[in-house]
Image (tube, rainbow, N blue to C red; front, side):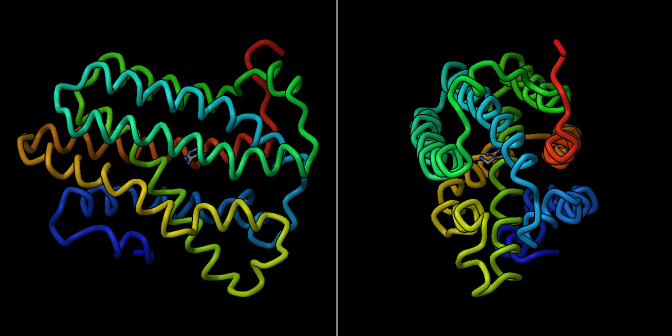
Length: 235
Ligand SMILES: Cc1ncc(CN)c(N)n1
């Protein structure tokens, strides 16, 4: 298991079960060309721009999932956590997206006219479906791969690159997700899942485990589709 997985998952906890169940797709995601070329600094600007645009659309839906979870949730502390998390998404947009939008000259018009790729839509549709139909625990588990996979890959990239991260073409991206701040910002999610899962049955936990594995795989596919510069539905 990788550094972030060890750091967060207490032996026997639900988080450890999730991490173990997803370990092969998690590793496959890290080894895929998008991440490895990004690490080497040779990922083309064209592919990264494609990803950035898809990610802008993704983050809109991701924010909506938080808002829907807030609306259906009856725990006031979890509602506060969700509201706070919306501020963190705004921060991610300001640090990562605004940087690359400027550096790579991605026009607002291009973003406005972009259509979600098939893979990106599959991911956000699955999260939104859970947000509309699921209970609070299910919605939080749908959000977990997003926070955890990015923190883990960011930390691994930063660790492998060492000082070479300075001046790297994707330094801002790597540093944002490798930062302790990014990891700490999702501590509420791991804590709230752990708390709510105490009331869940074994059958429910097994279903959550499957949802989590699917989410990690959708993260992998999201990058793969950006690498292929996959088109949207109305091409
Ligand atoms: C697809 C995706 N997943 C996760 C993250 C990290 N918030 C992101 N920006 N984009």
